[in-house]
Image (cartoon, rainbow, N blue to C red):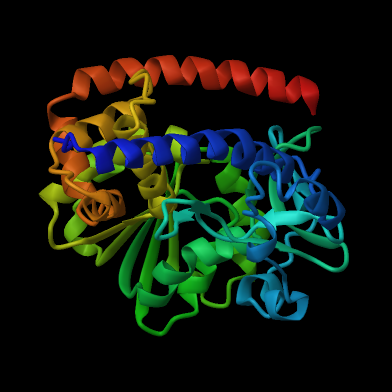
Length: 358
């Protein structure tokens, strides 16, 4: 419940203004970054798009190339130039000098403003990628964003590890170097990803004997496997929060059944940010509640006590996000499945258009 006071009304107006600015400006900027069309020169042209606000320059910094390539994977693994029927493994991810890339997950400052960390290289850099054949669509890369968003898990994980998703084998390699990691099981459903990994990447692992790869769907595997053999389970089988949510929710049910295992999820902080944004949309009465994340955000707001700005700040931190989403999901499984089908159709249409453009 949201308190009905003048101060709360003024806060609603403020949040609505921030959300409008975020959708108009930050979405545009992120689109330009994704397409590699934003460089330092253009930053100077657009960094004060609305009301003199600047969400770019304060958070852009040069990326230390030497430090980046001291990363164990980038230093030790040569992806070469390998293809199969579907995929192309190479250093096809090229970032031109002074072009902006994202380096970490979104968050909000104490004034509800969105913040994202950006970076740029001072010279052209080629990085490992796994792309669809004959396109520039990269499904998997190893660059600052991936390295930074995996850093916490890479640092803390130990014992027997289960990884949902293979990709370029980045996190598997980093973990395999740790003395306190005994074994790594990778579950990957795409046979062509497995073939490239086993033929071109795994042979370069210093401790390849630690790694076992299983062909299969991660949800199906987790529902039938004996999970007591693992100390850690990390899942990364999504591109962004839009396709993540439909796998993340049933994973929370599996996690609840296996309290002895430490579960973690790539991009969970990004999910937290977007659900927090949906809470703000509901608070500012700007949510149309047609998107599953917006529906969840409204549910969380409707079941909270918000009497002042501090209450709202604490709410969007979502410190108990897994518990909240689990509770919502068990009551809305059928709705989730229905919305998943519609989202899959939309993503399929989007990918067809993307392939034509690229």
